[in-house]
Image (spheres, one colour):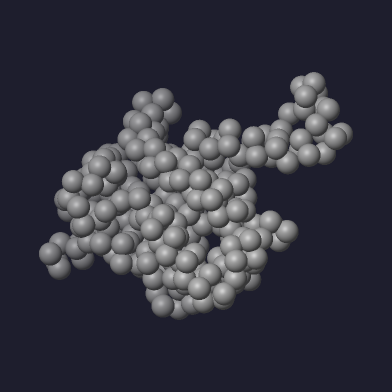
Amino acid sequence: MLYPSAQAWRDAPQKRVLLFAMSGLGKTHVSNMLRGSGEWFHYSIDYRIGTRYMGEYIADNAKREAMKVPFLRELLMTDSIYIGSNLSFDNLTPVSTYLGKPGDPAKGGVPIKEYQRRQEQFKRAEMQALLDTAYFAERAQDLYGYPNFICDTGGSICEWVDPYDPSDPILTELSKTALMVWIKGSDAHTEELIRRFDRAPKPMAYQPEFLSACWAEYLDETGQNADDVDPDAFIRWTYARALAHRQPRYAAMAQNWGITVTSEDMAQVDRSQAFVSLVAQALETRAQTA
């Protein structure tokens, strides 16, 4: 690891960290807090995806819908209006809206083949954004003079890596750049995430094999045709399975490539020094159990 001990971490003049966990466990909250301290550069993987790698896909999809409206079509064809997404660290809705949900188009669904195509686009985008981490860590130091760096990853990071492979290209590069920290949720957190998702189901990215298996199982279980599937019903049905699928992958990433902190402890972090201390404690725990 980048910091082999708690003391090495505390003494490091430049602290570089990468947070990973399911969405909703505080990665962005902590990253925003550290950025607000003025001592940390915040690199958001999802923001990088939406601005650098999927910006044209998102804008073109919006234009495609606008072209269906005669009034807007004429304005677009004469370059009289501009359509783009208004992404920010706190508003990544354009990315999730583009991903969409598979199922009945009359209910806002996307045909499964198109959905899989967009999933593949997102996979490539996230993998590249992750590999950009080292560039942004150096940029934060050289261009802006930030002493510390935090990478705020998306929940789907575990879908594109093999945490059991010591030569995994993405994890190898990330571990050279930053200390990888898993925010581990409790069973109570998992239940709350499921309840929250059930109230407002949002698009997600899935490992292709996992998505294909879930889609086939859902169609078999419900007896529906692909075009009849309620998009929200499918992703609600899939969410708990996705959590169960990701949990052991996160755990292996922490075991083989980083450290673990609990979501309860992370929720208590309210300033930069408290974050440094929590990471130091996790490094000490890892050393004692190694």
